Length: 369
Ligand code: NAD
Ligand code: GLY
Image (cartoon, rainbow, N blue to C red; front, side):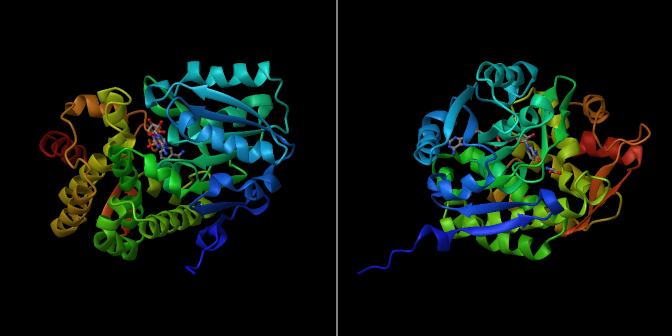
């Protein structure tokens, strides 16, 4: 008889350590069926599941069945899909539904989807009745390794990405790795950008592991994906526990994001995926670091090769230096009107610094497509 391995043994769990607001991240296949993991985190047997028109048809019924079978009343809210909808109008659709349904302070919001759904649902939870509980059920690689963890929630403004929001931690993150089977290839690659980011920032050993394991990851082998998600979440949980509100260390998680957010806003939200913009943005940060004499060309090449193995763009679009500077001027790391960047001294060694204007100008004109 072949041995049947129970889901419990395949599931990995780690904790985001935030004192009384600590919460678990469960990672593994089939977790959408696990009411037992969700029930202890509900303040009342009532939830509102927020999802979108792509993820809803795939997974809403399944999660709803899991919860209703456990006696939980479920109200669904299905939003339009896309980064372009991460805005006030869509946020208001959630509030409309919550008020129409008379959702209460103890009603839990569940975000079922990628980072867009996670960010907007989290912000709705942070602000509805001045704050209600929420649970992240991330269904993209990017959201499983990054956006569902750490409590950054929010929406975009036409003048700046993620500029309106709140820190609001979830009660639980439930990452069902089976949901990644339906993810389009381009979205899988976009998630790899944030995975590679952790290696570049502080975890050189993880970077080495990724260089050796990109092929099984891109083929969606469960063991490789679970390991990559676990190690990414462990990196993120450590940083968030040390610096929840981004007074210092947490800013490192934004490697490539200053340039990347400018690419997203400059090209129009949704044209470049967030992860794609982060990959190309990281190569601009690497180029600037090299021009500043901080990082060796060989390390830049290793980063470029790994992004390419993950089918990610490594050349940022030529928006024009002025357009880049205009968008980067509203970056959250700006201090006293001065731009600051996450730069590299080597693989696994990132830090935050200002950069000489002439070298930045060179990067924005010479290192772009
Ligand atoms: P996304 O949420 O737009 O999802 C990508 C696409 O995949 C969407 O079309 C979605 O409907 C679809 N999808 C989701 N799960 C699927 C599945 N299992 N099968 C098939 N299709 C599926 O994009 P994303 O990359 O998950 O998230 C990007 C967003 O996350 C950006 O808005 C970014 O700013 C944000 N973000 C936030 C943080 C944070 O700390 N809060 C960190 C990183 C990124
Ligand atoms: N994605 C950056 C952060 O969570 O801080």
